[in-house]
Length: 479
Image (cartoon, rainbow, N blue to C red):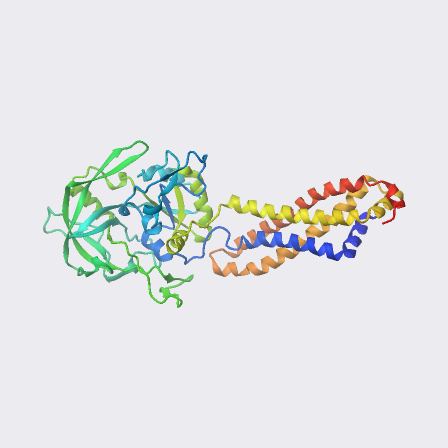
């Protein structure tokens, strides 16, 4: 008795129900494949100006991540205790002073040792650099500013170099002079090319008031302190001016920035940051009597560079898992969107995305099995006839699974092919290679067909066992 062939014929005879089941299965497979077009990251040029100027693609802050664990009673809405100079948090989360932030009892805004965090995350695949955000507040004349370390490294080339932002003069020298050596070269700094500090001419020497930096052990980590009473005034020569256009749109292989034609006015980086090299900053620490070396200085922010932005979400989630709830790992493109819209962070964990995909396949499996159940209810007499001519319970189950299996495979094939044709553009819109695209295609094939067929067959077994209990006496009833 060829019940498999009989099941195929039954599918062709009931195209209305079969079409609904096919559509549900195809949609589930399509959702899975489409979600992997640019699966775990961003296009290459998104947020590129900020990433280059800050010195990293991901930002690690001592703010609890989105997936913070703990009961509701442990999470507390806390007022913002931070300062603008401590990190880039206020530049992106500009509503923090008004709204505060939510954290557990142990995870407040705090400075931390960059070396300890580096030890935890340096083995994460895809990381190419880890830089602490190093800055202190200062006064250029009467104007408050932020003295920040940002080197123009030799291995940085356009568009990731600092040199591209210099619009007048040049980047500061790496070898500072000393106030005790009048014949030595003066300490240099790169000043903003817009705002109140932009009026200082290149080549002029400006008095910059800086505090003495102190480091003391805190309750959970190192504590960074500022002593203005014992600070000092240093002379910094304006070596050049910078301007960062945050609306730059770059394409792969670009040699010059271009503005999006939709943007009527460029939006420039508006933090009053005075940029110095590591050597100059260390010299300033020594001049103010700070007994701390630059490498031992705690920080409020860590900047992480990745080898490819197409994998930035995956790397961010892996770092988050390593650091736990005491930190938040934020891709710069997401921070840029938060700054522009004031909304919450939008990227989801891969676990959550996987759960949604699994639920879609469960729903499609329920539809496939449900349509098969309805069909069998209307064909009890036919099942009874099969039992009369010798069909066993096992044969009936095989008959039902044939119907369910063919619909699941056909639906998965339709959704998979349609989504893959659409996803070919991801080869050109991101850094994904042809080899990785083919690998992802193989994984999508296994996932789409495996989940579709697996869920449908599991639910189909339940329908088949019900059908196997239909007695042969059903052949005597009228439909």
